[in-house]
Amino acid sequence: MLNVLLVFIGGGLGSVSRYGIGALIKQAGWVHFPWATLIANVLASSILAIAALLIADRIQEAQLRLLLITGFCGGFSTFSAFAYETVELYRKGATGMMALNVAVNVLLCVAVIYIIYKKA
Image 1: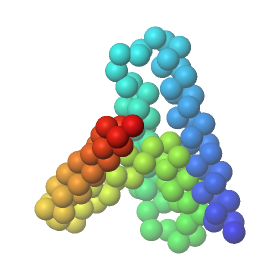
Image 2: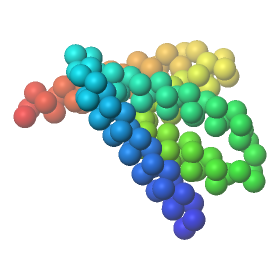
Image 3: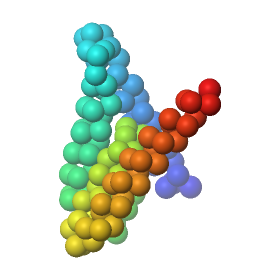
């Protein structure tokens, strides 16, 4: 139950942070490009990478991993998880799987949104 609570708290903090970035960008008048999404994705990817390096494979810090990586970064941007998993495939020498991961994620996600919008 504690693990679920940690993910919940981290996710909530990540979501609120994402909202805050969006509000600041909108207030600044930067509305002609999706700056908030770009900033959230880059920040979440950076936080995920730093957190993964700092707590890499340390069993005693599994709860910190749930709070920061699964919770906060997941609530802030799932793109960070996608980016991390893509780099991990590359680091393992699975470049074909890496390319497939990028292509399938981008194509399917864009296609699903396009199809749903087209039907609306």
